[in-house]
Image (cartoon, rainbow, N blue to C red; front, side, top):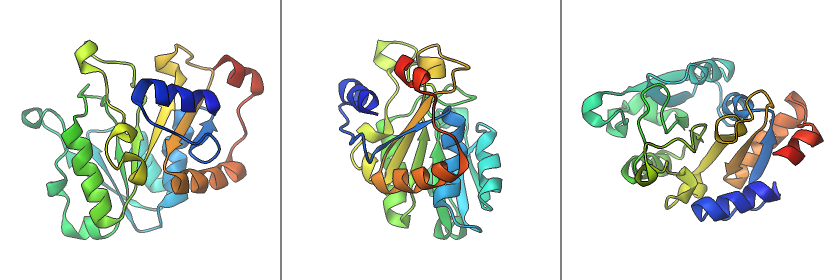
Length: 207
């Protein structure tokens, strides 16, 4: 946890408390599926993009929530427009899930996208989960992928999921992490304790 906090400080300028703002998981899949179950109430909406990584729809089903996908199109650089969220969906929103660099379009997030998501989160009191699986994959040095937590208000409303599979070529080792808002991390850790096993110590050492 301390190493991950140091990594975020070094790469993104984000300060994390290793005890309250970092959780270790057996791969990012557990964070993406577990955090919705920890924070979303049955009947609420999970808002994401369409298309999206299929697990987000499964996560909504597991949380007994409905899924609403914001349509992506090339004219808007495959970035969602939160003005397109219907009032009835916004009023019952329980979680926003974003994933940039985006699977499957390859689009990169912009500061404006994260600002819009965080404004929506503030206005509707809904947390944001950013699946940052492709954090190290940019087209050039000028296109370094952005961390949600490095944006103004990012940690106030958001958590970010990371995986060592892509960034550190540790696919199959099943090591990932969730970082960010302490309340969300605490809720997830409580669910994690009763649902999953801890990460084998040797894998933690290698990570």
